[in-house]
Length: 357
Ligand code: NAD
Image (cartoon, rainbow, N blue to C red; front, side):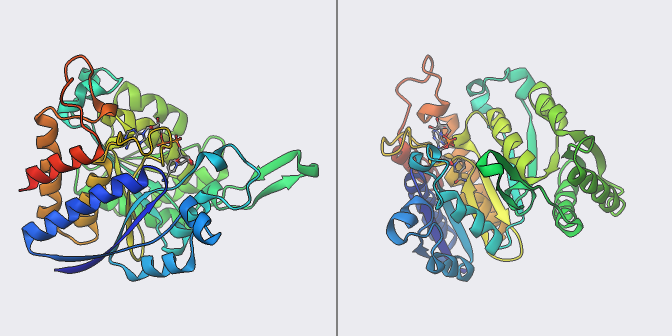
């Protein structure tokens, strides 16, 4: 199969981990007889530095023309510490999601057994946890009106959802639940928020088309607690943009580290595949970044955008073998038992490539 893949490294460790993800895609093409061609595009701080624009038109055009995007991260401490900056790296990310119609963000949270000890949660609570999050990505408080009143002393961000926005992600989540354990948990704050009351109403309507799927509704505050208390009770979780942003970072601890979690952003056109972590400037350029989230993002890309199930499983199995062999990056290492097998970004990538041979 011939496919065009756009590599969009962005900022910080995004540059380091996407190079490793690309090598894994190359190896898969070689092994399974596919032809993958690559191009690269700018986004975020590096794009602002080069063009003044966090998402230049050229990058957007390349994204729209590609079969899939392997994405890194955006962000730079310069902007994190300057809330008044008018042009910001994240604007590129939000514009990309809006322009590509990426309304569903899928985040599989599954713990590799070998990493049971790497999480701060007790192994007996974690073992067997397997959650698929669907976070809505193009609505909510991120995209509503925002501004300042009262000479700048009052600020507002408006949360807004329309029925069709909730329905389209709900259907994706219910479809996925049917291929799994047939359980769905819809997370909202319907006791307080009108957007959440609409959310719950739509979920209840969509649920009628899926009588074989068990549905529960939870408030976001209770969900935050239940994720840590009993993560195995969840199968598919569907939620709004802001709640999903926060809950999936919390859930990353179920998988041991942010460096292990991949995500897929999908909608009507090109899909974007990226680690859930950010640009991590504290470790940028030190060779410490865990590339497994980018490698697992490449596995999601193969599965979802290219329908290459066997190829995707080959990548996941290779990651599993590397972990079984005891190799770790620093973020998932247990310093007492695994000294000597702690690898840097590139070396960890090389181990995965060896296991794909
Ligand atoms: P972060 O995910 O970049 O880092 C949080 C912590 O996790 C840091 O200590 C970091 O070293 C560690 N970490 C993250 N990924 C790792 C990996 N692959 N291997 C090893 N350790 C890893 O989040 P942050 O520090 O809150 O944000 C840094 C910047 O990234 C900010 O500018 C923020 O806006 C941006 N950000 C971007 C995205 C995105 O592009 N999707 C997501 C989150 C944050």
